[in-house]
Image 1: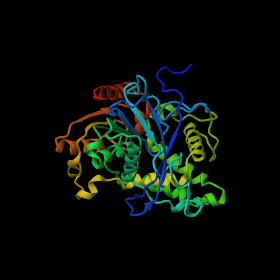
Image 2: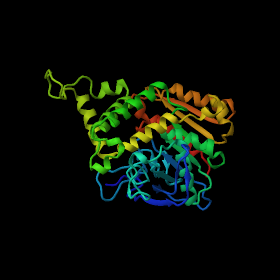
Image 3: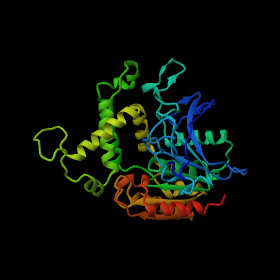
Image 4: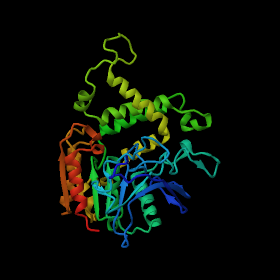
Length: 375
C-alpha cells in the first residue's frame, strides 16, 4: 500500500538552457541540459518554491517513486512529501541534477555536439558557483523570482550558502545541514585519494573510457569504499557490524572475512555500476574549491556581508567529515553581520550520513523551521 505521506509516482522533466554559460574556470558551454523533478504545486503568487540541492552522489530524484522501478524512492523521501518536514502540501519543491552529473543533466558522459563524441575528460571543471548559476536559470525557466527556501546537506548545504551570496534577493531562507564553508586539508586529502583510485585504474584511459566501451569500475569502487567509511561514525559501524565474521571463523586469508568488508565491497560494486567516474571527479573537485571567504582574504564574515536570508544551520555530533565546529564557523560569520540564524547540534550516531536519516529530533527541527516560513 502506498505511503499516504509520499508524493507518489514522479516523472523527471528536462530543460535545455540555450544560452552560453561562462564557467568560473573561464571556459564556456554554449548550452546545456538539466533534468529535474517537482513536487507539490506552485502557488498563484509563486512564493512557495523550495530548491533542494543534492550532495556528491545525489541527483534530482529527491522524493517519490518511479512507476517502472522497484525500490526507487528518492534519496530524501523521508524529508520531502505531504505532511513531512518539507511539506509538499505547502511548498513547491524542486530537485535538479547538477551540471556535470550523470543522471540526465549535461556531463562527461553526454555527447559534445562539436565533436559527436562523449565529452569525457574534455568536460570542464564545474564549481558550486556554476551550479548556482544553472539553478538560477532553471528558476527563471519555471517563472520563480524568489525561493522561499534553498535547502541542502553536505555539498548541497554549500550550494545553499552560495545561493545567499550570489542571489541575496532571491532567497528568503537557507537550510544548511551538515556542511562547511570550506573543506579541511584532511577532507581535500580524502578526495584526492579517491580521485587517484579512479585515475590510476587501467580502464580509465585518461577519462575517455567511453570510447573503449569500458568503465573504471575498480577505481570507482575503491573511491566509494573510502568515501563511505568517512560518511559513517565509528559508533555506527560498531553497532551495525562490530567485528562479526561473515562465516563465523577466521580464514587466514585476504578475501572477505569481516561483515564490514562485505558491506563496503557491496556498496562499492553497486555504486560503480550506477555512477560515472568522471562525474565523481568533478563533484569532489567542486567540494575542494568551495571557499566563499577566498575572495575576502580568508574573512568569512566579510563574505556574508551581502547576505539577506534567514538561516537554519544544523550539525551532527558524530559527523567528523563536516564537524560541528565547521557549522559554528558559519554561524559566527552570520552573527558577525547581525543576520538571523538558528543553530542546533543534533545528537546522532550516524556520522555524516545523519542528514539523510529519519531522526526524530532532527526532523522536528526542520519541520518547525519550515512551518514558520511565510508563503
